Image (tube, rainbow, N blue to C red; front, side, top):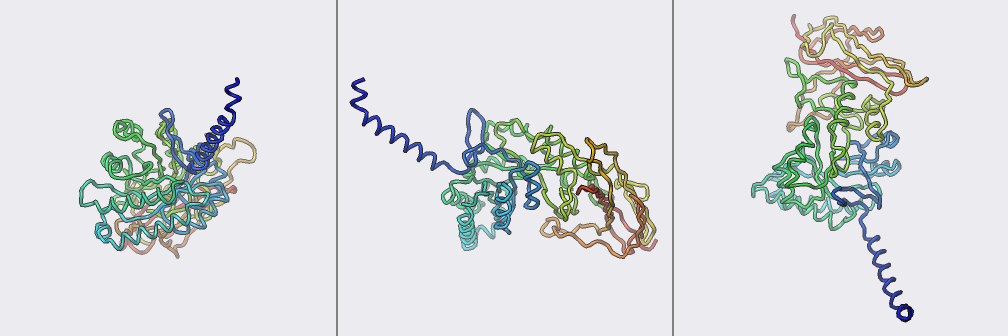
Length: 443
């Protein structure tokens, strides 16, 4: 006892030192970081575990927050100031994409002046936005490839310089990149030749084998990961198509069913390496059609998939009571029947809806109207990419609508077209479907 009393000043001194070190440790702790504890990876944000319930897109952030979502993923730096402002207002975190050329663009990576300018511009951008509270992490490039050949050394040098710059200038936020599906060779090269904090996957149809692929390759790579895009299959992923190669698009009702099944049965929800996911696409996007990936229309009306997303965010059962599509017929046929029409012929179409019983009074869906549109088939591609600009609808075709039925004059010009139907209720819900057809002239 006398010893303790005699050395009280010394003990107090060491306690003060320990306390100061603890405070320094807390102060130096990054705002966002990934930690592995007892075999499980956890993303921390502002000192708290942060499981990502995200959406790919930058619109309707108030709806995302109301649905239980907490993060978005964007692909570039366009309008980032306004996006971050909206994100902060709605409590949404943002993964910011930093666009860089594909690795195969060696004409670019062998040009030291262009690479230096890219580095300078990205460094300036990162330092400008790194202290914004909405920033969650940085994503360098999107769906890049990571070849092994030494001829790609300049790409790796440029890529790693960007990653290292972010780590040095902004240690508060992790750095990732995305790949298409699960690719062993890509992961092998990324692990050996880059300094990323985690890997992110854009995965659609192959999500059904994703968990198995992860498990089988865990002997080499067992790091944390995100799914930065998931949803329905893209048009090119085993989708049915017509005799003239027009992709057959599922109705919004079929999409909702597919997405719910994928989340419940194929999403790696119990994997201790999984940090969360982003459903694609939270907004309205033209890609093959303006409805293929879109969870909303351009006025903010919601498809059934929005409710499925809400269910995945909150864990609550879906309660969508808007219109649901059972079938769409054109001249009594479905899209898979390869519908050929004569130019200027009178044609009939009809949409059939499923019955929806409200879970409680006041939720019944009353169909307000149906909108029909005809578009020329969008086959335009630049640099092998889909046209992202919505084409103009075909105008001047006489139409008569009765309930969910339509009669119209087929276009005069020969070629491929698509008939769209959008069904609205009184509560901001829509159901969408479309049918491709081909017009024959001179018959």
